[in-house]
Image 1: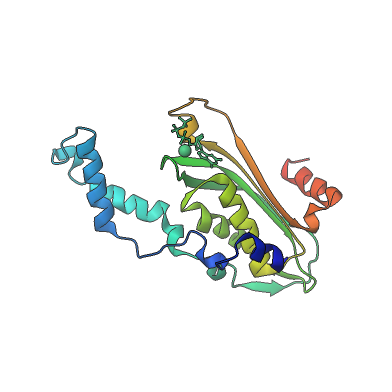
Image 2: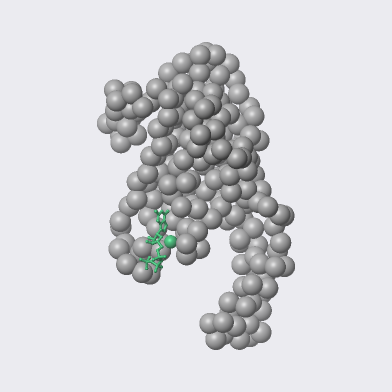
Length: 209
Ligand SMILES: Nc1nc2c(ncn2[C@@H]2O[C@H](COP(=O)(O)OP(=O)(O)OP(=O)(O)O)[C@@H](O)[C@H]2O)c(=O)[nH]1
Ligand SMILES: [Zn+2]
């Protein structure tokens, strides 16, 4: 499975996929938000907008916090509990930001893996934290799905991984094509979970069957 990872992302380790190239610059973000207000014809100095640039900058610091986090920190805790079958955390709420429009997409993630021969597992909460590391970046759903799967492959050396995201994109509902309620489902499956029977069993658990 290590080869798969190398093939897919030849130049960089998982830590660098989309990670920050420089520290978060609050003042720069605030100045840009002020420019947007000017650009839309607003008066950024009117009372209600005075604190908006700094407030939006703080919000961006939060929604893009994953730029400054890494999968290796999240997945550094592993336990040997000798479990060699599927571990699946379903319905992990997820909020991310569409990199095309910088508006949110949100929904749920389902993250499962079959531990490697050594039976090493990670904490269940770490699977949800891993989703947030990659979700809290400018994203497209396909890349988010792949990154979560590949990070698990790389750090846990499992025998199989399945990651499914089911999200609604605000850029398709509040604007543009205006299709509220439409869902986008993406999956990434690695290792023995690619085997049709194992994959069908995992998908059955994910769909609640
Ligand atoms: N594949 C993929 N596309 C996305 C995602 N988020 C947004 N998009 C799409 O990105 C595309 C950008 O298309 P453009 O034609 O450049 O932008 P646009 O004129 O705003 O497009 P419309 O949304 O159709 O109005 C749109 O079709 C979006 O639906 C995503 O996570 N994955
Ligand atoms: Zn979009």
